[in-house]
Image (cartoon, rainbow, N blue to C red; front, side):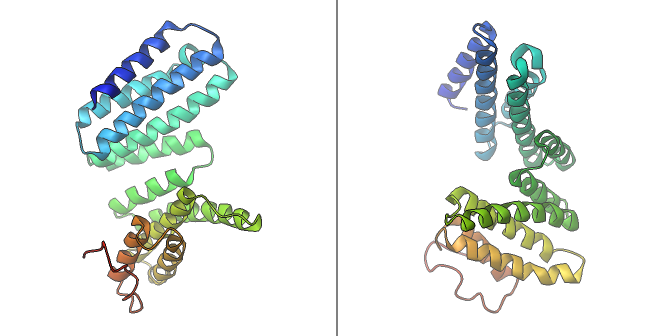
Length: 243
């Protein structure tokens, strides 16, 4: 962890512990502190750094979001607490998956989904990826299908308005189809395996809007190639891709 990040965390904690100002200010300070803990821990996990350090940061975030009256007082504070608690469980799930504790990761993601009320596409996709790791392909299909359904609705609404999805959401839509296709390709049910090519093709078509050099496009094209699709010979861009 960078020294600057550590100093920032300490500063935010000191501000939180002062407990000065009104209810809204206290909840905002707690939210900023928890967000920084999650962001720093996620950076450590992605860079394959010290998992013990990431665990300490996330345990601190979980502790703060558990103390409703002290750190997130009032009605607005409760909503903010649930938002940051859901994000913390998602980060804990990522850490558990990274360290091979898949069963724990599933439980953390179920907590995230419970706090969200209606599981977000991000949560459903995280769960689907985890279930693929655990070779629970049919369950992964269910989670990925929910993400596809939600993102397709968003895309339809945007199209109806004459708009396009932001790149981040378009990437999520393509990724949803990609993960669904990967799970379907591994299913024990033949009909679901047959559906994999259609899902991957949908994902590739959406990813094409991001550019053929985008990471999402390249990943889906590779998966299609691995599915031995005879029509995929020209799917991969000519530069930046190696087998």
